[in-house]
Amino acid sequence: MDQARVVGWGVSRYNRRAGLAVFICVPPWIPRLYPIVRIGIGQDSHRLVAGVALRIGGIDIPHDRALLGHSDADVLLHAVTDAVLGAAGLGDIGQMFPDTDPVNRGRDSAEMLAAAWKRAAGDGWRLGNLDCTVHAERPKLGPHRKAIVDRLAQILGCTPGKINVKAKTAEGAGPVGREEIIAAQCAVLLESTQEKT
Ligand code: MG
Image (cartoon, rainbow, N blue to C red; front, side, top):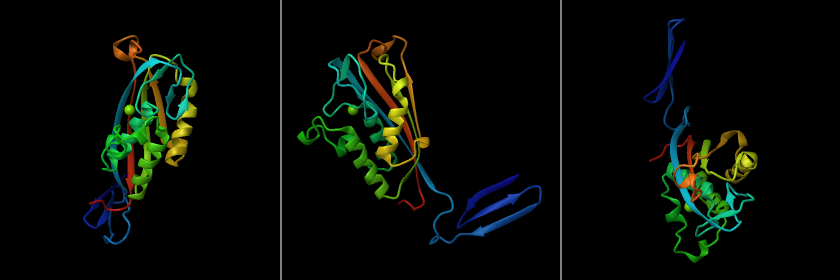
């Protein structure tokens, strides 16, 4: 069995069966062999009100209620935006897009996520993976899951295989179960080969 670990300026690798230990020297000016990884989490919820404009994950979903918000109230994209900004150490969505700014009224949340991702990618981050959960009693999101994954992949410029979207009901309990809100949570892993200070 191989054991490898980063030691100082290099990587030590030990093969127990062969009884062989190797140390590979990696000076700091050579790109890292192992990427730096950072985790970000995102959470958001919006109130359900009368209306028909329901957008989740950048997809318009037919429903008899709508989410209320200053922008287009896309609860999933807001959570993902916060997770990306958090992992990259760039603050949060409220700092980047204040709800006191009239420019952000009714704004397409895909635009906001794309702008946040552009900043993170500009700092050298690439997406490891993104895992999301949407909490909604109704509508059923299963039929829209692939479209949501594809849209997220399009915004983040990655393959759909790096993204997972789950949907859960609250079985009638709490504000989600009473259909007062829809909530979303996500975790994102960012990778970089550049040292971060
Ligand atoms: Mg929000």
